[in-house]
Length: 128
Image 1 (spheres, rainbow, N blue to C red):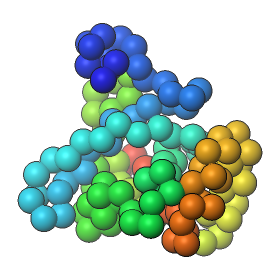
Image 2: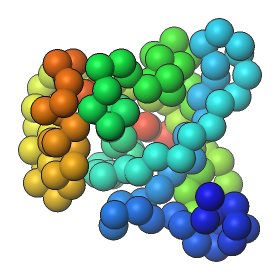
Image 3: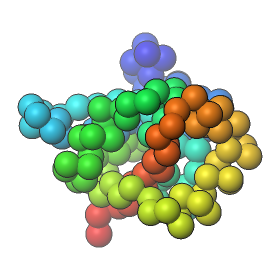
Image 4: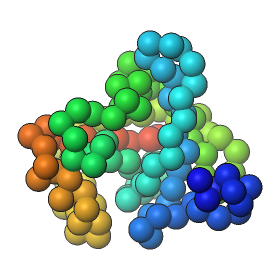
């Protein structure tokens, strides 16, 4: 909301995390679907996002979309959209990253306690 109100000049951080605009392709509609998400961790040129949905027992729609069609677009402050490919972290990657993320952003750990599903981490990697 702040991003729209300030024409993109403000609102690109939340809780000290960068905010990204993730555009997926709707798995049913085939239409572009955009959502604003925080990225609590970055590795090299890849963003990592958390499919927490606040600890809900159901995954967020954007995760279902990118699982079906992993080619996405990502926008960050002051930059045009970049084509990226989404990949759900495997168990070993998640086990390595989860403690790093929850150490700095304990809300994600709190979300995990609310659900029996393992909250996925997703890599957003630039398409080369």
